[in-house]
Length: 97
Image (tube, rainbow, N blue to C red; front, side):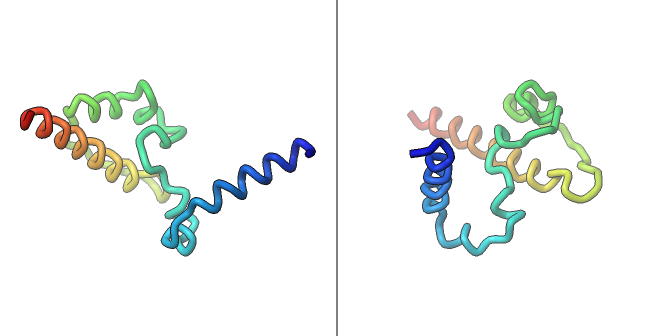
């Protein structure tokens, strides 16, 4: 087997794992990051970013997200809330033990 054929086979296998919603979802929806780790090119949200550290410490200040289209404002807000919700859920689970 040639080198290129293995890559095609791997990509085909990954594509089969999509669910029905992902097959009909618009491209923008399919490419949207699903965690803060998948956000690329944003220094404030990166691994050592200021906003990311505030989110992880549960110390998010009031802020206004401003900028042009497709600057990940909505995705950042969604991922931040998701992360904060999971932190809150973990704390509640620990207090129930």
